[in-house]
Image 1: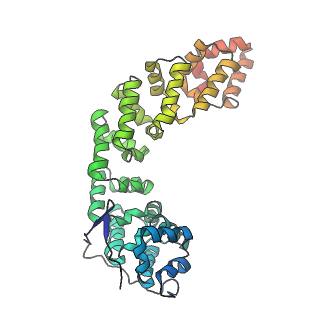
Image 2: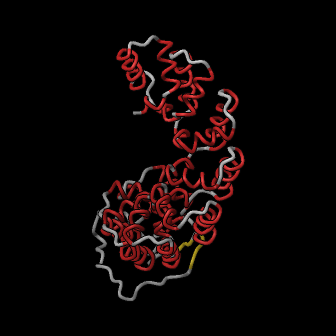
Image 3: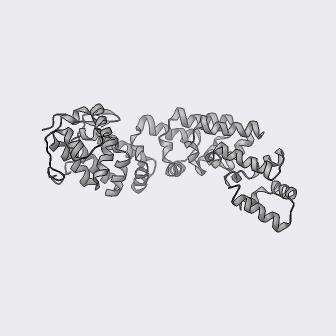
Length: 363
């Protein structure tokens, strides 16, 4: 007998839905499938039998205290189901419960088993796929079937096949934590309507960087796309679309602490206009994948190692911004030395040739 009522949770809110497939059946789980359940106190079962850490025990006590009122036999049934359905090791169980002790609230037969069976059937998951998803994001087992169906239906509506959805969700299971109506759909519509993406292009972008479906619309997507790229750098929506198709990971970088300081350095120190910087970003959106110190180091190399004047250094960066990513003490220096020795150039002549044809160093 369970002393704490099992409930389903939907987006963090308890749900009374217990809908399951009438044909869903589970192999009976032996109550002796792991260790002897003695003494008959939940706390000792969790700590001694499962080997949960002191930190996890405190988390259970503070966040899911009612679990301690359940019988060890009840808890064992839930843990045994999770082990069997996903081939979990003892350590896997400890990690999973450390992340989401609330899993122990759910009924094995009415909550956990139907949810697992639904995910397996809807996404054609292997045990390995299921294990990967749940180990990364165990809270997905707390959502109701209706909630999960609606989220999977969203990806079908985007035009993904079952194989495509499986790849997306196994790689980024936290996508299932986003609400459809207030999260996934508004973020998708923003890129669809404001940047004029087609559904096919959106599928490509999300496949490359699923996190775009998880970022805040107001605090992340709109701030970067509208206020930074379009208003500050004077870029057209078409340019932003090309950037995101080429390197959607650009949206992962912090705007205030990373992207804006880089932009300020280019505009105030290197004397690029906002439009010129926008052109550089369009040609090389990976610019923001480098630290400001790396960018300063490369520009310093151009100025002081190659003895380029500010105008020449600016031309080099504008024409071949991908040079920012080269190793100044490795491949870039080796290429410059090769050209200098092969053509018998002086240092001044090398700098002059390089400033006029910087793209040759990118070959």
